[in-house]
Amino acid sequence: MRVEPARESDAAAVLAVHVAARTSYYCGVLPAQDLARSNARDAELYASIIRKPDRLVRVARLGDEVVGFLMIGPCYHPEPDPAVSSELYQIHVHPDFFRRGVGSALHEEAVSVWRDAGVAAARLWVWDFNTRARAFYAARGWVPDGRHPPDGPRIGEHRMLGYVLDLERLGAGEAP
Image 1 (spheres, rainbow, N blue to C red):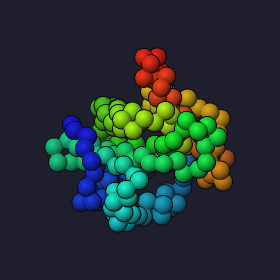
Image 2: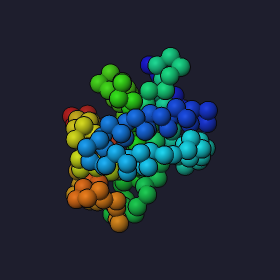
Image 3: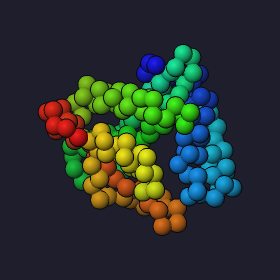
Image 4: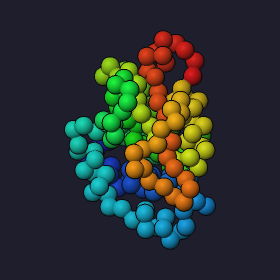
């Protein structure tokens, strides 16, 4: 497996991974009809994100197949802590490749990019019901900070939870 910059030609594959991954964690939370409507996206959306100069998109490939991706960029919302200067928008892995190191490789790539850019801390938002993702990020040093996105989305009583990764502490060799 290799992690490399996404190309515009990867947009349809990135969309397919995103839909498969989000379907796995929304299942049982979002009614099937709402999920299908929410998943109806166009690959051009992902191609436009790949083209944005302030976004970084990497794909994980096994052979020629895109099996996961990550997106990072500037924080969507104002941060109370000025050290938090970048946001991990997404790491998604196709469910057929869960627990094979794909997510870990993508996360390591994000950390490497942030370190190279001198980012001290990064932001992440995760749905409260997505226990798999919450455990994944906690194991890599992300700490919940009690925040929710301003005017953040809700699904019933469910909300997104804020997490922060202190890259300086992580870089100092402290275990997550």
